[in-house]
Amino acid sequence: MRKTVFFAVAAILVLAVAFVTVHAADQTVPAAGQVAPTFTLPSQDGSEISLDSFKGKWVVLYFYPKDMTQGCTIEAHNFQRDLTKFEADNAVIVGVSVDTPDSHKQFCTKEGLTFRLLADPKHKVVDEYGSLGHFGPMTIANRNTFLIDPQGKIVKVWTKVDPSHHSEEVLAALDEMKK
Image 1 (cartoon, one colour):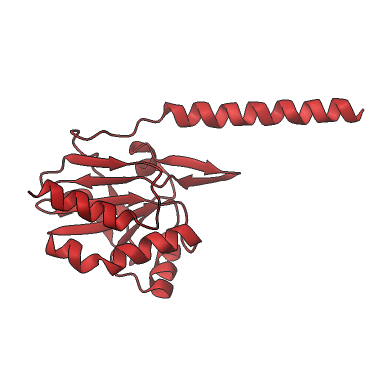
Image 2 (cartoon, one colour):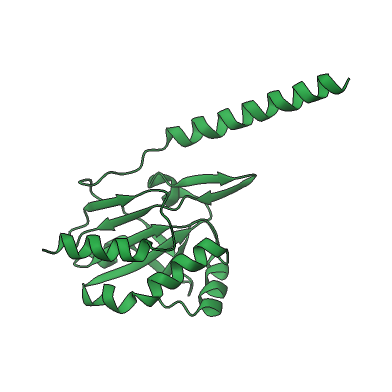
């Protein structure tokens, strides 16, 4: 009996991993050189923010898994720390997760974040940018970043970023692009 239960559980786990792997493989991350997919999402203050509203500016569009978690807090703090450097380079920081605007508002208040966090609880934009992921039973955004030029074209893509030094990587790439 125990062997049968063990093999049944093992088979279910193998199928679950295969499903998640196949689902993740179906996603296509937009590549450098492509026009950035446009979108409109609510921000932490409830206002609707459109990618098109940033035409003429560099956009650092970063996807992150979950408000108030360790890695996401580190990444957000580093972007906040470097915000004046990004602004000096005519760049805006925009974070996106599948959390709600209320969750973003709490996160921004607690952590002193002043840049835009956009809510995508229906996963539309996260999926469009090939950044839909899963952590156990939770649907999350994978930690991916897109640097978009002032004309709306993706010029650099980072996947599976390390949040501890990612802001510096993006600043360095932005400086290189502007030469």
